[in-house]
Length: 180
Image (cartoon, rainbow, N blue to C red; front, top):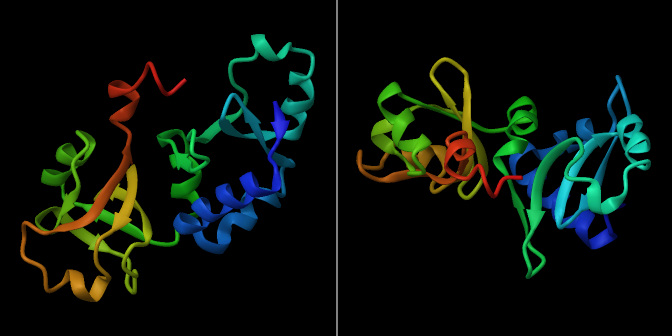
């Protein structure tokens, strides 16, 4: 487990900023306990410094994970967020989308959010912006990227895609062997 390099840190913060904007500062500057980002086996973990210091006593080959896995780097060096980061994205999300009850299951099966399933959307959401997808009961279901801005969304037909699917909580069941 090692600290992130400068280019890795930049890639992680750019991806997080796409979803939570300037609230990235709240991940680093916490009031309760200092947290940091660590890289282990290509995965980026968000962990408290106290837990990180305790993990030093475990040999690297024996250490499976520590803290919350935010995502991983692909072989080409791109950073991809995992569904395990949803708690932090939902907490600090800048833009949000709520889906109707009839649109929850299709989204949880990995489909995009259609205009017919859209319940509400945050005002002034730009095109190609990262959003957190909620149920109408304010339960975070996953996250994705908008296909159109809020203004353009109002003009779409019911079968048009509003949010491109990135990750959803159904992945805990579908991809349980690869999330580790």
